[in-house]
Length: 115
Length: 112
Image (cartoon, rainbow over all chains, first blue to last red; front, side, top):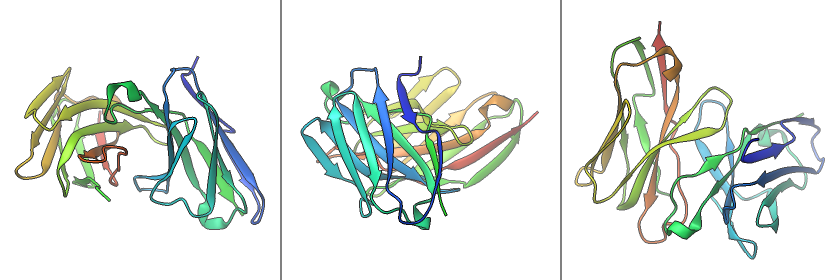
């Protein structure tokens, strides 16, 4: 079984709709991240959480919100989707017990298309 | 934000040849990490080098770090078609040490 799972894997929606992307992990990691990737580009950090009560904005948080429901679950919401949020979205985890951010483990991604 | 910049943007080689990718960054780092991404999939961690290390090996991978030049290189020896992927460096800024940032990557194509 995959250690980091994302649902859904693909989603097509319309402008103005509310969308939630979910991430679950069985690695027991305390740190979780949401990134977006646009075609041919690197990853941009949207939000990150170092534990259930710790939520931080990343580089591009506008238009997004997150919820850390439990240590193993981290959800990303688009309150009112717009076409330029069409991208590949990745969830990642890391083990904070090792101090500074070390190896991150990525989920398989969610391909989101906003029409 | 601290962002690694990979060079070249694209690299095409024959199977069996070595592939070298470079990364430059702007400020002091805690560590620098390299990741691989197969088309449309999640990133996979390859190797991490700390700021006090100069070279590290893992199988066919060799990473160097020159903090005076703020640069790193990833060498893949005896490349295989399965190495075809995008490769990203991710410097971790010292100080806050809370988040990685990724560049645009090097797209490596290994021709059989």
